[in-house]
Amino acid sequence: REPMVRARVDVRMVTEYAPEMQPEQLAAFGLVAVMCTGGYVFWDKVLVPQKRLELSKSKRQGEVKAFLDELEAVEEAERAG
Image (cartoon, rainbow, N blue to C red; front, side, top):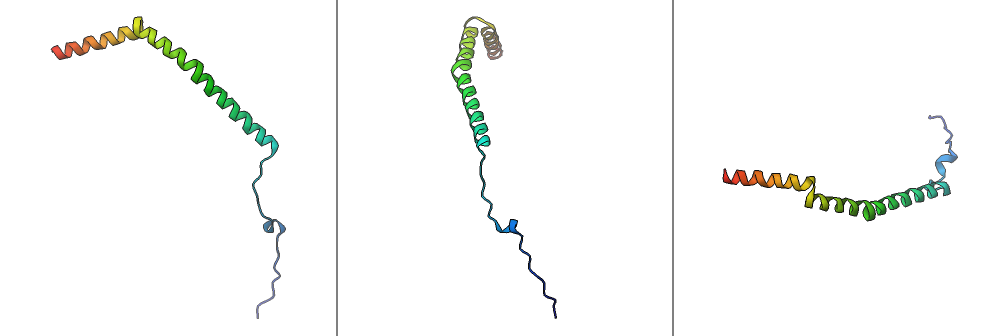
């Protein structure tokens, strides 16, 4: 004969787990989302146009123009070769 074993039910195992978000966590998540969005908008609307303008000026009369002219001269020399 097998001895009778009492089944012990742990209350923690019976309760159902449901994920929840605390208000502080929600506020922090919202703050992070706003900061990321603000950083992207600043990058897209301010920094990118500014750097494009700098690059176009440099292509017309700056270091980039000198570099492109040098590449063109090397290509012409290789073709003549």
